[in-house]
Image 1 (cartoon, rainbow over the protein chains, first blue to last red):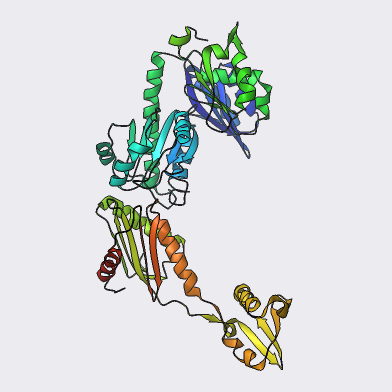
Image 2: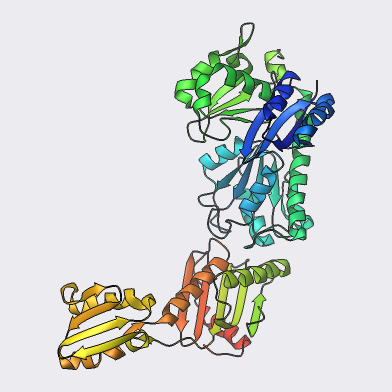
Length: 312
Length: 193
């Protein structure tokens, strides 16, 4: 069964029927938003059943669309969180990617500004590495990007999409070794993106992010995960009651290769490790339960089939 | 930027210069400073790195004196000030408190202040300078230039007054001949510092 990421938008009336339907079909609800009279569900559903959900959702004014980024966590990295980058550029990009289903976190570096003085510390490096992908939003000058980017990428293991003011070709020419994706003509700006050419550049960012993540998915498919992250999320929310008391919008954040569980590591790390999945197999057997550098959260990295010899 | 008589962004990187032209435009507009600036020349060299912004302001509003926003009524030693525009009340009170002490400044209601002064002192009271708008406009202007400049330029020098202003900034120590560079940029606008 192939699960595809989708977004369902519809009225609040009888939306629980759609949730039940998705769960009965073997899909997973990743996130549920209630905005006034509207419900937005981000879910993974079986590919063959999309039409069925659409048919059942139609009388409830529901609409289902493919959202390639559902189930991914993306870091939007800016050199700082000063007025030079906020709220436009960084917030606009982070918010736009979010519309396509990704969970984005903004990472404002403590000392990322400047050309010669830019730095990346170990905490920032580790936090970025906990994501599926990092979008770097840099400035308008080629000279600066060329000089500071090698420092800002040091130790980053996840794919990088680099955005900057110079055209895409110019960015490709100055970055060595190459990164996974480039989007040019989106550097520092101080106004809201509302004109069509600006929106189309945001679309370019989403397109590039999707392309890079698709490539990563293909790589991962060669050695599949021992358990799908969405399924593991379901098991944790079923077996760990305390997760329902967490007030964060996504108590369990789904990533491509794992989960971020927003519970304190010291108390719940050992509990999670021992939590059973199926016939004597525990989470600890299939995944690494690690302390996250983000607050005191837990990071679960699911091991691939080649390491566990198990697929559940 | 139609309101500005002269506006140039000089930069060795053309694309970057164009972006900064737009940034400067938006920032000055957002800070309501477009009407204040008559000429503006921005020079950015990311290679050095150096940022120079200098310009000329339009004629700024003069100093606000007590008579401009209040009536002063003198009866023997008792001076009653009736405030017309509350915008300058706070700076006025600060001045009076500092000069005469809080105990000697009575304020029976929001718009009335009562003082007991000698005849000589009360005569010059109407001409008391309360607020200098140009001071805050120049400060706003320098702040706006700091927003425009590329981030991370922590070494700065600024100057304002006499209808002229400039801000130079860099990551590294400023070059010794920085004032010559600024003068040169002013001469491009047909002005002298």
